Structure formats: C-alpha cells, structure tokens
Length: 328
Image (cartoon, rainbow, N blue to C red; front, side, top):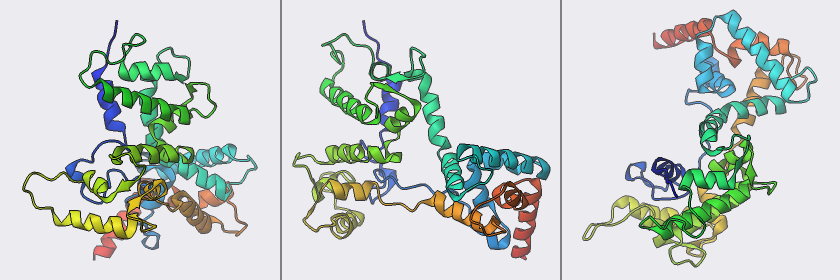
C-alpha cells in the first residue's frame, strides 16, 4: 500500500535553493544559485531627515513595523518597553541592553520569515505529534510510503527520485547535529534553509557541485557553468550576456585561474562573504541612543529615543511632514 502526495513533491522541488535550473526571467549572473543576504529594509537609511523607517524595519521586521505604524505613541512606547525587557532576559539579564543583545534581537526579527515557513511545514512533517521530526516521518511525508525494496516502483523516472531521496537524507544527517535521527525545529530549519547555517555550508556547496559537474570530475568547467544558465536552440546565436558570463567566470569566479571551479570557489560564488548587517545596525542604534557613552543601553535611554527604534501614528505624521517639506 502506497500513497504519494504530489503537492508535497512539488513543494520539495520548489524549495530547493541549490537544485535545478534558474528560471529564464531570473536574469543572468547565476543569481538563482547565489544566496545573497537580504537587506534589513528596502527603505533608505535617512536618519538625517528624520526618516527612521529603515531602523524600524531593521529592529522590528517589516511586518511588525507596519503594525507599530498604526499604534499611538503611548502604546508604541509601552510595547517597546516590553521588547527591551525581552532583549535583556534573552541575554544576561543584568538590566542593560548590550551590543550583543541588540544584535541578537535584530537577527531574530530578520529570521522571522524563515521561522514562519518552518512552522507552516511542521505539522506536515511531525506526523506523530511528538514535537520532533524523524527522518522516516520527513521521508514518508515528502515522497510517500513505500514497502522496503519497492521505492518509486510506480514512477517513470525512479532513478531521479532515488537520487533526490538519497540527497535529502544526506542533508538531513548533516542538519541533525546530535545524530539521533530526530530533528528539532532548529535542525529542521537547517535542513530546509541550509544557506542560513554555517555548519550546512559544505552541503550547499556539495549539492551545487553535483548539479553543475556533469562530467563528474569534481570541478565546474566554464561550459558546465554556462549550461546551467543558458541552453542554446539549434542555430541560435549566443546572446551577448552569455559571453559576459564567460568573462565573469574567468575574471571573478575562477579565483586561482586554473580554468575551473573547485569547491572553495563554488562556495565563494554561491555563499559570498556578507557584511554582518544586524551588527552594523545594532552599532548604529547604540551610538545614537547611548547618551552617557558607557557602551550599553538602559531602558530609559532606549525609550527616550523610542521613535528611532519603533514607529507610531505620530512618527508617521512627522515623516510625512518632512517629505512634504523636502518636496517644496
């Protein structure tokens, strides 16, 4: 007896950030594979003109910042006070907010969309409702229940599915840091979003290499790199952007100039070094609010500069006036 949830399998294919050809409308430069750190906010960082929208979205996250925009100043300050208490409790609980605690909070808010996606998947995978997701649960929920030795006997491309299953099991074993074959929420998050976790870096690189390395020599040649971005039709002239990509491969991807990409170079490409944006913003908020310059923030210091941390109907009104004045 077997059931195979086709929708889940489709979701599996869609969620693979390091597998499959980028869509044509994703544009050149291999952006479909590159895991760039998202900005904390799309708003301009324009404190000089009294526009703190960037800071609000960085500190609260985009969706919560919208909620605060609708609050009265009194309620906004009160809720900020509760956040200050949470930041301190999550750290050392000494009554002050340190740079590290502020950075941790900003990082936490920016990860909310990832936690939400894991929460949405949790009940699908945790079929026995024991608060953990075992490998067997995840495998069965994703690929369907098969009797031993009958895996994918009823699908046309059984070998492809077997490879996908083996690949997911390998990723799961890396995410399962305590090796008990049971994933906590944190471990399932690492499985579903490996690009967010340093200990998953090697598996992201390995999966990318496997996708691109068609001749299985352990490297990505320039033609393999181009084939992932562009498939020529018979008689079609190669677009100019493809030649630009060949130059990108030669000048920027191939760091040791040996004509191919090894694992280290693939990692530098798909997981480029990123600025610690939460730390930069935490430093900014600390600098602007630390009135006694002791390198930490009291609750009073944060609340006295509340309109930089959070919004309200009053601060929105002030920003509208500022924009109107600038337009004049």
